[in-house]
Image (cartoon, rainbow, N blue to C red; front, side, top):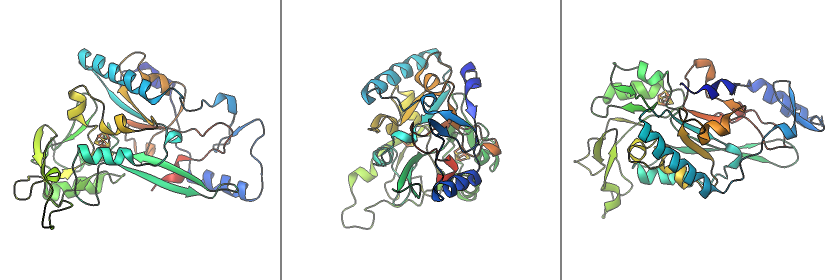
Length: 307
Ligand code: SF4
Ligand code: SF4
């Protein structure tokens, strides 16, 4: 990416071992560093140095992201980035439902989920919620697992599938290659397909990867094809924010253009600890996470919540 601010982002994937050491310390009654926060990489930081989540009303953030989206589309060189602040997530799954409503999928699968983990830290349970979707990797293992062109890295950063070709054995290969299990192979089922009254909303037309699709039995071309999140590219191209972003009541996701000077995604990531999934594999994800706890709370390693 061409964004000079990216140089200011500290990349760090703290090993699970350190998290376990921290748990052991809590269990043995050891206190966290007073007056500051003990980080699991052995460093410490004053609580005041750890910025809390933005308290700006969610509506204001959405309006700003919407304006920036329109501005970026008019420049023609956007580099889409999603930044996730898990500290603001309450695990309501509104984003999961919004995603399913926007991108119809069959029973038991979807493009997005919210992982919930209860961690035995301190006298009361800690529950961490972490929304996850396809990372739109710059160096995507799924693309390497299939013939060239079936999975395309778009100039704006979105990883897009060729739904006509990425089918059968190729779809299975792509699914197996994703280290985050973000691809599923469509089985063609709907929630009401074997009921007396299949529901119309399940058979509606929707746009995905550049073409109209339906889940209507016998008319659908989706069965046996690989599917995943594509940042709601059909919405973004039409000037709207991804469904999960515009639905989240907590303002957990920041979405925007890393190429746009002064954009919200650049502003919120500047100088912050950033967690990138499988950084050791060099995926270069376009979905990144703040690796910071709330001020005055124990720091929990992102790896603790890996699934
Ligand atoms: S997260 Fe998985 S599906 Fe998405 S681009 Fe990376 S490897 Fe491919
Ligand atoms: S960007 Fe769109 S497709 Fe991706 S998780 Fe969000 S709602 Fe689902």
